[in-house]
Image: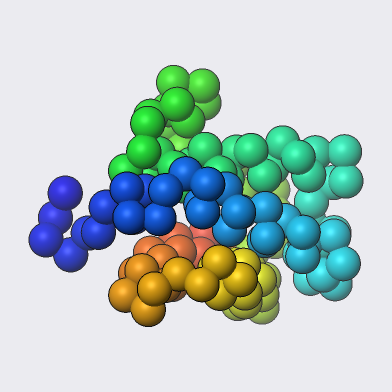
Length: 125
């Protein structure tokens, strides 16, 4: 772990991370930008995949890697139009979900940078 990394999984705990992801996916179906990207029949699957990825990447057990292998985020998101508007809306909904959990300011700032970097990396249009 680099000096700049925080052990977010240990600091927030699995329940808080799960609540953040659930809060994000509660907002998705009604969203005019992101909603169409998430098929209703796979919303629970998408939630489980994001939760597993975040748990793994933020210092929790590597179950995601055991189940799905390398994240290959760009490849897995290639079928979707991820432009600046989609990236920004994803961040808006995710930050609202984080704020709902009242994460301490340093943890929120860390998550905003971490997630923002990934969201920017996934822009493909």
